[in-house]
Length: 107
Length: 381
Image (cartoon, rainbow over all chains, first blue to last red; front, side, top):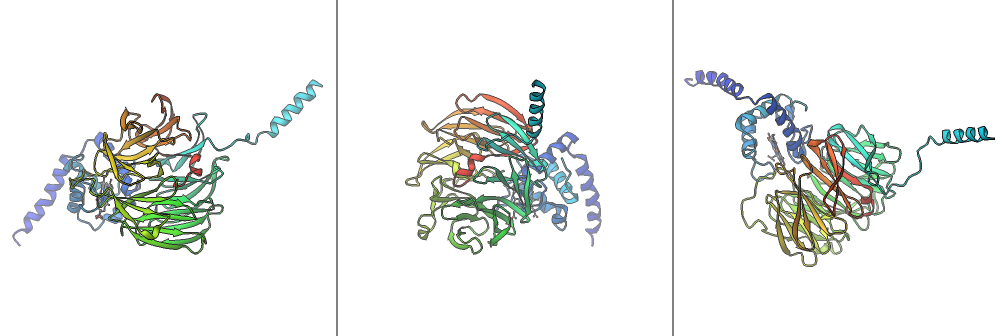
């Protein structure tokens, strides 16, 4: 019961933090290109899946945001999903996941 | 008299508005992946002759050619199979044959086109003339590395279940399939230029599965086991591709997974005989048709580089930066030129393979695969 207020607090704080470190518009364009083209080599340019799972808003709807972020950050050992932490910052990964969940922008 | 002649000439040239006769041996296509379009190219004139639209999602598209070199069969990611008439520059036929597809192959006699699919996992067999579906072999797994073999057979590998399957389509409506254990997560396959050995590269373990299709009953064996020597592999941002071009003379040149190396194998003994350090993780390792050079491009983030190995000396002889995001290379049939697609520069560059000079650059939208009709006459293409 006592943790409930914290939960209420935590959500808006996280949202604010994400906005504060949102990638610049120029970087956002690069990220859209990277996701469509280079993630696309496994997930498809339309993100409908390939060797990797589909990354459409519908496919990701019920999956927790943090889990998806962790997958992009660290990859999934034993599968073909590589870790992107050497290429993408945590804030960029968060931005990508938020866009994936709501329908990824076109180039 | 003179005016009559002029009138006659005018009349004749009016009739000649049908296109001039031409052969197909110097034609090809360039996939414009983001636009669902292919450009028809002329390798003699270094030019784009025409563009054909409406081919759907062409991320990861590939193509094979009819034996007469007139038609390209283009396999799209969205399961589209499009038969493009290169002479009339238009779609001859098109079917949507699966939900998610990765490529295809054409039979030894040119009468069957076979598609390899991720969803639903399996292969589908089509009449090359009509694109009528003749049969299918469900696999319960993503299919990779489909290659044509002698005797109307096809070899392919199953990513999820780690097998190599050989399907005999002598009777195309009643496929007969034999199955072999290969290894963990085969990512692509190739058949040697003589059509004898089928190789499946493994992603889930170090090594390559090898099947002698002249005596398949002996089963698949593993070669290049432990080439990574237990060292942790680098993150693989793009799966390498295999095809018959990896073989030059009596050596096969193969991409190492998660390593900045090309592995060299003797095709008589299938033993490793060397490895060549390169700039990044190889994606395509392609022998020039005459086998004198091997050209290598690389996975993200090293995909702006291309390196050339001299097979005679085993040394790297050239490092090039032909553009941003080099996705594919294709040699002219007799090796004097190579065409390279630079996706993020929207260009296709043509290089002289002897001097390494760039001869010309063509504009193309987000180009990926380049395929010339000379593939029509090679096993495994």
